[in-house]
Structures are given as structure tokens and as C-alpha cells.
Image (cartoon, rainbow, N blue to C red; front, top):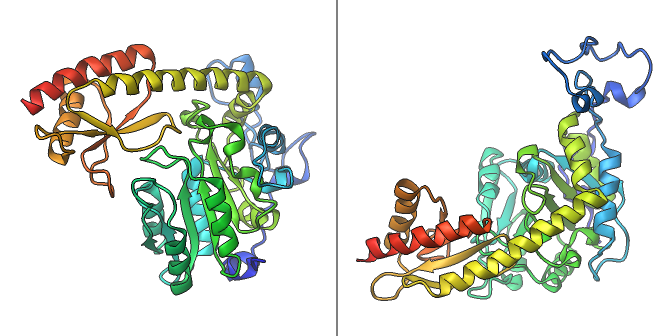
Length: 388
């Protein structure tokens, strides 16, 4: 069994959370938090805005929203899990990036302990590590399967003071779901080490519902899962991230977070999105994206100058090689195509050719049909111009 006191930094183990005014009283003549009782300084206030009491500090705990998220995940649990999620398992943040940073600050002593990533992967892990003065060690994904090198990760953890292992599933930029059997095997093999396996599931809702590892956190005490409403839920603008963790670890994370980090506006929209009606809408959009992904891949396969899809089909984007005249993936050609699309044609994709094992790769988000049609039209023209 993992000993949490060996993972969490000593100063965090003894941290007493900030006690908010709304922890004590929520009703009555509230004159305890130095709020402006006249209301928001807006010329007009809509009915919805008025109901949110924007002049008051938001709920610091968001139990209703947490319960609604738990209900959604518990409805399709991962077969490897044995216990339902409860609100005490959740910590909410300003996007997944806050969650990434919070875990680093919770566990890694600056300039002393380390975190591990599996490239190619999400760039914010490294940025958050640098800000916190935490060294990043790397164990690349197996290529071309994009599976975990479990032996390599275990060996690195055994040799160095690694506190966090970040796994992106589905991967970014590779759009490939990591097999849950690999996640569980890794967690089992690291049970004797003071380290957490963190599964970043930003794109998980483009997979089967039971694919999420979120419902494993009450079964495996060294698994933590990150999610967001930015992708399948189409709510990047409200900045809501979710950390699922064993209850005691979640207590530490909630003690660390800023007391009012989730605004009333954010929680109101998130409650609507994770309601029964919201989930129906999300699934409709997800199905449309998957359908358009199939059509876009079929169109790419017919284009001269576009090579293999070197990633998976588990996200709302795909990763394709751009080929030179000799039919080989080429970073110079790919970057020229990327720039010409953006500057001359107002079609913006992402050049990923400098990522490990992604030579000549462009990442394409899946748009609506008219956007994808425009992409294919412009890409056909640009490929002909760049490749001659």
C-alpha cells in the first residue's frame, strides 16, 4: 500500500485550509465577507445574472456540481474499479492546468524531487515543472504503438526521486487511448514507491464512457485522474478542470486550492452541461465529431502529399504525416504547409513535427463539415504549391 505521508510534502501534510466566510453561514443578513450588498455594478442585470448573486463570493466547495459529475462517471464505471466516486474524491480547478500545477506543488520538493512524462506529450507538464523548479525525466512512449514502456518507467522511478508519473490518455498529440490494463499494471508495480500515477484524460469523452480511469481512484490508492470540460463538453471558455483522487489526497488538494477558484458563472454553466439534458447534447456533438473525423480521414487518405495517420482515433483531432516529393515525412515541408495554410488561407492547424517520433506531422482538430470541407480545399492547393 502506498504511504501518502511519503508522497505529500511535509508542509502540506500539516496545512490547515483557509476558512471562508461561507463555510460558517450562507443565509441571513450577510455582513461578514466585505461584499458589496448593492449588487454587481452593471447597468442592467439579467434574470440569470441576478439569480447567481454575483456580488457574493461563490460556493467554495461546489458539492452539487461534484455530485453531478460523480453521477455521470459512476453511470459507466471502468470495469477495473470497485467503488463509486463521491464528492470527497473531487477537487475542482481553473482548467486542468491548475490541477497539474497543484499536484506538483503538493508532492514535489523544488530542486530535489522529480516528475516523469512520456513523450510525445502535453507541453504544460514541462512548463509547470519549470515554474516549480522540479526536474522532468522522460520515458518515451513505445513507437509506433504509443503504449507505455512500463519496464522503463518502473526502472526510472526506482533509480530517481520521482513523485509523479504523468500519462496522457488519450494522448496529445497522438490521439491514442492508453490501455487501462497498462495503467493498472503500472500502478501495481509502483505500489512500493512514493509516487502517484496521474492519468490526464482531457479527451476521454471521445472514447467509450467506461474507458475513463476516474472510477479507479477508490480502488488504487496511487492513481489520480485529471479531466476537463474544455473538449467534448465544448466549454473551454469557462475553465473548469476536475481532479479525481483518493479521499485523503483530495483533502490535501482542496486545502491547497484558492478558496473561491470556481466562479458562480463557471459553476452555473457546468451544472447545466453535466445535467441529463446537457449530457444528451454533449453526446450529440461527440457523435457528430466522430462522424466528421471518419470523413476527414477518408479525404486525407486520397490527398497526394498526405501520409499516414500516425496516431489513434480516440480524440477530436488526428495526427497526419506531410510528405515531400520523395514520399517521406518531412518537417520542412510540413512547416511550410502549416504556415501557408495559416497566413495565406486563414486555416489554422498545428505543426507537431518537432515532437518525438512525429516527423513531418500536422495535428488537425475536427471541425464542422463546412470547416473540414474548407480545410481539404485549401490543403489540396497548398500541398500542390509547396511540393511543386
